[in-house]
Length: 392
Image (cartoon, rainbow, N blue to C red; front, side, top):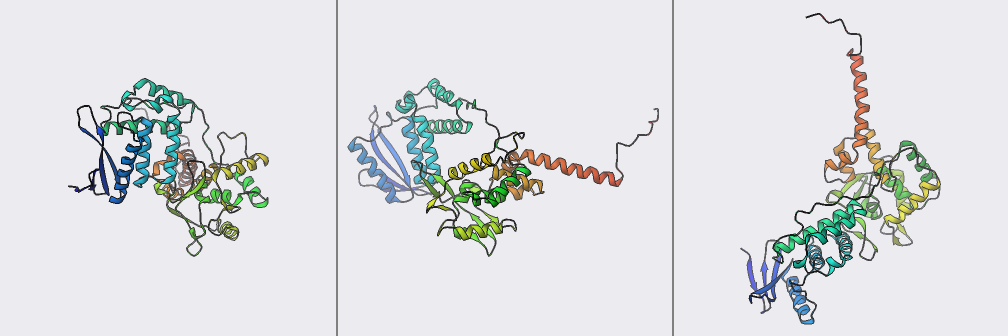
């Protein structure tokens, strides 16, 4: 049972398994019963600071009572709690705030207290999002349902009004990002290694290691170990609330922390990069961090101006195609899916198999052809003329 520590008349602080929880009375309902607000943090001091903040917000009139709170207010509180409790990193926090801004653009969701929300207006908002990408729809849908479920949990409402609402599908048609063909890759490789192209080192590194561009731009000198011939991937570039670039202290995914072997092919490139590197980061532009969008714009210019792409090949080519190209070449070379999963930093082998299913299927066909040839050499050939069957 949690140990209770009495506060100084303003609330109470509890010791829990993961830290501390505090409560404070913020008002009274129609029956005269107290309405309490709970906060959590790692230390008792942090909890008391949060309780004091609520107390001061009540005095200054900034506090939002439960019967006035909107879905946007509650969503922001949840996001900030997740950040303060270290459940999410700064980069994830910024992405959640971007999603919240999209929801806040709807006057109904921004201004209507949670108790007054109904099914149809929320559904209409999500339907208006169908012109956006499926990724954006998913984020809005998840945030709305998660926030309303939390409102039920906090007894702000009795039930979630959109508990049975299905997630809409995007009306956008976007071609799947594809890998470069071997001919396209060689044309790009020649341009990047023989001409003066900005960010050519980053593009080559992605194409030859499969690292995400955000991971590459966040690399520090200390992440490269020429003794053990490895590159440590442990962080990524992210974008703040105001669009500013910063280095997140964790990679994009939980399994993003990994060691990339420096192969014989990659070593000369790493030597060049280290020679040109900044004092801290491998890639800097006039002392500033390089963003993924900067590299992407240069990549698109190079691809267009040097006629790299074969227009008869279907699929969309983006900067992420460099990562796909590495993975495809590895599959074609016979690399096992589990090894590729680790190199790419995928959390689940299913992601690797599903993302590169076309390449794996093509590789399987090539290997089956080799098996057929082996069977034929053994003398197993079902295409030879068959003997007449005996009449039964």
